Amino acid sequence: MLLSALLISASLPGVTSFAAETVKTEKVALKIETIATGLDHPWSVEVLPDGSYIVSERSGSLRLIRNGIVGAPIDGVPKVFHRGQGGLLDVAISPDFAQSRIIYFTASTSAKDGSGTEVFRARLADDGRELSEVRSIFKMRPFTSGNIQYGARIAVAPDRTLFVSLGDRGDRDRSQDWNDDAGAIIHITADGAIASDNPFKDNGKALPEIWSKGHRNPQGIAFDSADGSLYTAEHGARRGDEINLIKPGRNYGWPVITYGVDYSGAKIGEGTKKAGLEQPIHYWDPSIAPGALAVYRGKMFPEWQGDLLVAALKFQLLSRLHRNGDGTFTEERMLANKYGRLRDIVVAPDGALLVVTDESNGALLRIARAQE
Image 1: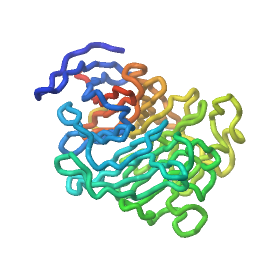
Image 2: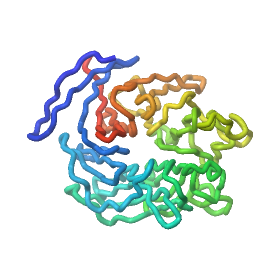
Image 3: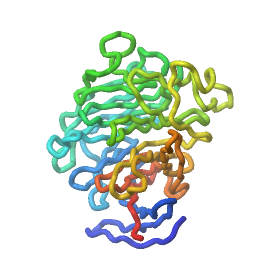
Image 4: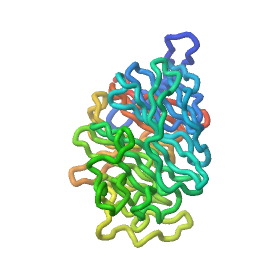
């Protein structure tokens, strides 16, 4: 519910002023500020130590936003496969970014055998204008035709290793092939080597980079900083979007089990449960099309400690999932149909939320606590 609007003015010449809206939710009133607009289908955002933001645009550009000004495309970004759901996708910063200037990003790239998800490492110049030392550190295998369901989110672990989500690329059976990266969470070091604790590193039962399988299109992945748990938010087919608690070597069932059906209405797989396959900790029916996931651990919203926050494309909403004592979740839906398709959500160092809208005139939003 919209309670009020006030004008916020930028402090530097040439910075556009935007209206800040106050929205009431179940537990707290939120102030929604538009930091920047004019972005081309932004997919991901991170906060840099100097308070600026780095944003990826699916069409292939990385940009810095400082004081509300969207900078020119950063030089040095490799060519991406920008078709359908593909393009320049997630961006993440190294935990030691303030010293190293290292960033990671994912993109769909192409080769003669099709396209797939690729992970890159690079160094961002001090002035933010270009990347250097750009190199590919992981490329899913095999590449195949089609331009959907790349997954492509990155979660950087406390030990600086990377967990990357990979979609099934529209071929559901790939998710159950353990010698195929599609439909997997993979785990690599910051240089792209196989992580030492991977469950299949030495036994030959699966590709050594695989951490878990049986995923459809996980576009959200995040750690809970309180206990190190790893969660994903995953697109189902028609119905059956999921939240999963990710554990090494586990099979999350797609397409053998699912709470969804085919877009035609036909049944998929064998039902909703099967021995040896993991159950989601939450699922949606109907789908909300989750774009990203964060576990809230911040000072600004103590009412939300430990809650899962999911940015959604369908219904253009922010879902807050509060865990009940019996392991179920109570959901609050916020911001529905107000700001566009919500693609990414990040908890900023001050506890505010950062969201990007996946639109041709996309925006970077900051969600803070309103004065009461």
